[in-house]
Image 1: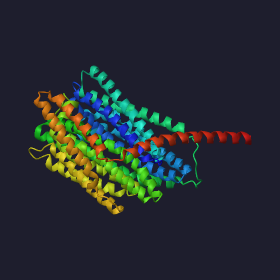
Image 2: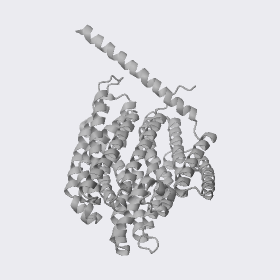
Image 3: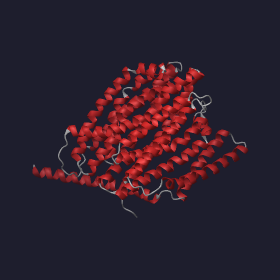
Image 4: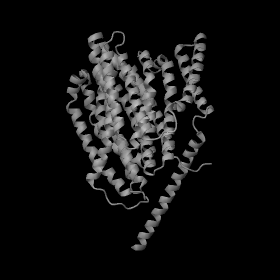
Length: 547
């Protein structure tokens, strides 16, 4: 039995489980909204157009911040420099609180201009306004999450994200149901109510994580005394790391905003405004939800990876560094490849199951599946490069990918017979281009002693077996006059079981080590708690003797 504890694996498991639960709740309220009378694809267009603008400003104030703070905190934590670790945290809280306030005020003040001039969807004005306070809440929240990630308490991040999503899901349904009755099922009012639920959920999430932090700040920790860093140096270090990470996140987020700014503008002159808004609603809601689902799970790897890579680099542990990189890429393949196959094979069935009252968009979803794995690999490699201190390459890769995305949107959406498919093709091209750039940079940065294709072989083989068997079973069910809806559910369920079975049989992961990691981590956590309690008792006794 190995006794070495793998906090990295344990953190990934916690976040993956959390993301699964988060996505389940997210899908529940998305299904509710899409199938709600008076909402549908048109309501989704209003809701998501406002939300995407919010997400862009949110990125500026928060998305790159947790990873940047986690990297700085992890470095200080590995050196047992507790004084400067806490100093970085407090200065970061102050700095990004200011950024959050500015972001909230700007979004509220220019909500009408953004809705009318940028999006050309005036109905989105109220949605943008009610979302504006969330910028501040998430800015502060992101710094605290980065702090916990940096000290290897990723489980706390997972719990906070879960609490926020549960609240958001419940409040969305409650608010939309109330407003639909008061406004006679107005799409504009219901979209605003759904976005207002996001603001309330983020405020509760901030209160929750602040409470967790305040409870643990008095815990005794072993430390080495270093000189206090100057405030100016701390701010410079935070900005030096957070700005490139934030820029990369902004560029990634801009892809969705480009769709919101181009799809409706171009299509309304070709197929009419009402149909153009509906087509954008399909892309921005149903397609985006299903395509981004594995990226949310894969974000668990990225969240745990940056502080881990930083720590290995600080300790000059090259063997451990390569091991973590290889494991992260393998998990990305294991999660991403079967999802691509599944979405491609069962695009219409998935839409029928999740959105029975608005199930259009199967072909768009099928095409979108081709680019998912490249987006996931780019996400993982970006985290590796950022952990190694190379923050510029992910920015360049995202920028070049974005240029390709804009070019494809402008050129392809106008072509007869392609229309909205042009936006999907642009996403795929952008993902592939970004992946090639970051992967070449990673090979140049470190000496990789393995090939990606070899890591991908087993997941690909297992996914092919899964597809062949599940499709045959579906055909048998349909020949026996089983309803299409139930045949789809059974086939998808069987495909999941077949793939999980293949993971065990092909021994893709050493599951023994994973389970031992979790078990040993729990044991060590209990031992640490006992040690801290004993140390507290000793310190109290020493104080009494001095008195």
